[in-house]
Image (cartoon, rainbow, N blue to C red; front, side, top):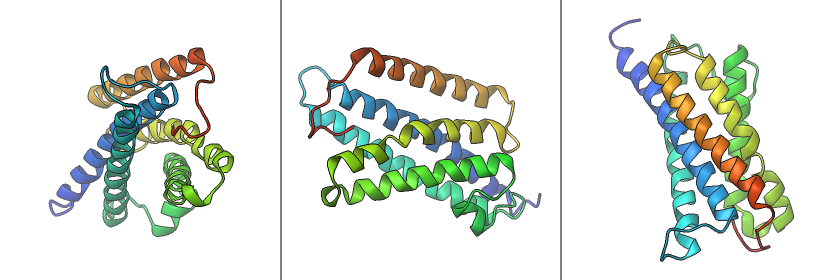
Length: 180
């Protein structure tokens, strides 16, 4: 790897990890919103706003991650493999997660024009996008098997296990107008 490629490589790695952390936070806050949780003394829109902002930041970092992966010639990521899961194993897994997340973002932007049930069904894609993202992060790249990436993954997986368990145990608490 040339020294000119190093900044792009580091940026690609860092934005991938930050994206995973932010996606985990957005997912957890989405479940908190569905469970009608809010910080003591505040209204539910606080949790909803935090969820949206974490998701927006995750998408921004993910966009930089994808762009730097395409720019970095050593990464071997082409434009086609960004949209279609046609690349090698872990790249295709990441692309599939990206596609699910893109569907989630696009339908959230036009939510007012969609029926609630359709929007909600597509929003459930987050339950598929997140495991694909974690698998991509653990299986792809030169940081695979490093202690610090394993620690990030364990923290994210533990968080997800806790909030999904909370969601299942809480049961259906959501009203038609609530956002997840």
